[in-house]
Image (cartoon, rainbow, N blue to C red; front, side, top):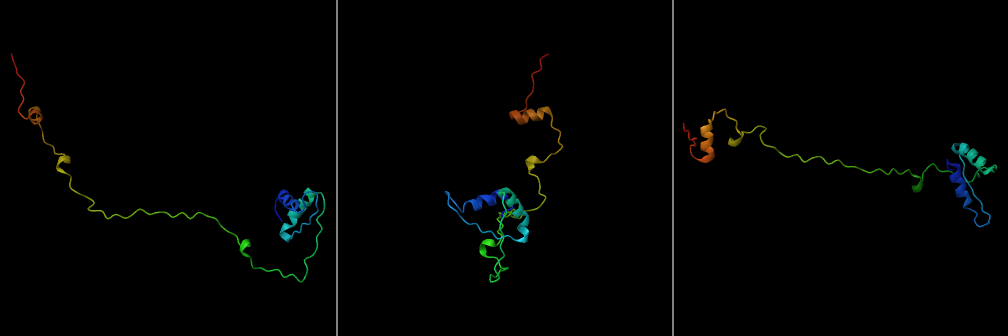
Length: 123
C-alpha cells in the first residue's frame, strides 16, 4: 500500500472505468496499518479485511522486481600521469644570470650603437 493515500486512491480507481464496476485487492501488512487508516479516511468508508488463506505460502525470497536497485553514477577519478623529472636544480642560462658588473654610460652607448658615443662639448 502506498504511503500517500491519494496515490493509492488513484491506483484503485483505475480498476473500474466508464461506469463499470471493478475489484481492487490489496495486501496489507502490519507495516501498512497506518496507511490503511489514511486511505479509509480519504475514501470515507472502511476497507473490508479478509484473512490470507492458509494454503498460500509466503516466501522470504525476493523476486527480481522486488530487489532494491541503487542507481548511482560511478565517478572514476583520473590520477595525473607521473612524469619522471630531471634534477630539481639546474644552472641558469647565461642570459638570465645576474652578475653585479658596473657598466658605465659610455659602455652602454658602445653596446647600443656599436661604437663609442661622445657628446660634442663646445665651450
